[in-house]
Amino acid sequence: MNMMAETTTEAKQVQPMSEPSFKMLGRNVSVHYGAKQALFNVNLAVRQNTVTALIGPSGCGKSTFLRCLNRMNDTIDNCRVSGEITLDGQDIYDAAIDVVELRARVGMVFQKPNPFPKSIYENVAYGPRIHGLARSRADLDQIVETSLQKAGLWSEVKDRLNEPGTGLSGGQQQRLCIARAVAVSPEVILMDEPCSALDPIATARVEELIHELRSNFTIVIVTHSMQQAARVSQRTAMFHLGNLVEENDTDKIFTNPDEQRTQDYIMGRFG
Image 1 (tube, one colour):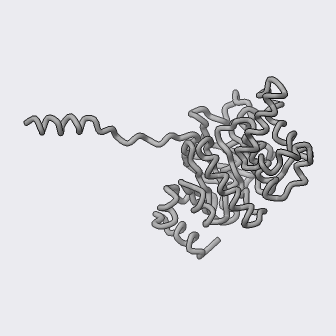
Image 2 (cartoon, rainbow, N blue to C red):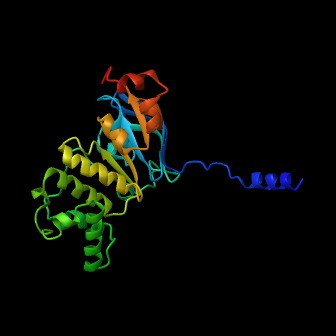
Image 3 (cartoon, rainbow, N blue to C red):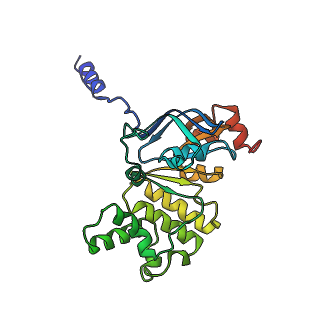
């Protein structure tokens, strides 16, 4: 009897598995460029402190969806976004949202490194300065150093901070752009094929950096490289012809996908 009572007590102490923490959530997201529809009712959750890879053939809508997450599509005149995208439960397309503040919270690293025509220091200091994140030069110095350390670049540039950022190698420039994004303390970092212009050594360094950043940031990466998606992400979403085909744990997507289109793409039958 006592043993049964103990077993019952133990059973009561077992906690149910917690729901994953969603940082951003897209519901029925559709995108039109003029009369052409590029995305069709996409529903996708982005998990906190997780790397989510968006894969699929060229023109499938993955970069279009990525740009919806910080309203970069607002800069395209004939682009219309419908549906709902939330950040911590708040609709980012609400009229009351400050888009400049949103893009500080949801930073972006582009396909080709695009450092400002300024010094390495000023590239990183620019965002914190315009957002008023530093109260003094000493604060700014600390933000610059910390950001460059997070981007794995500090040891390479600490003695040349006043030199032009454009004078760095391609891989270093991309890490400088990551440092620039990190400097304003974003919550989410979007990466649109960040390694496509880099050599294999620089690519490996950026991939290693993505692993390190995940402990502090939520990351969404668009990549054409399925090997890269498999290496860096924990969740993968497959897009095709503007539709989200499926989204799941990366291991499952690459070993036992639910959809034939995903299997065919991974096996190289189209793309």
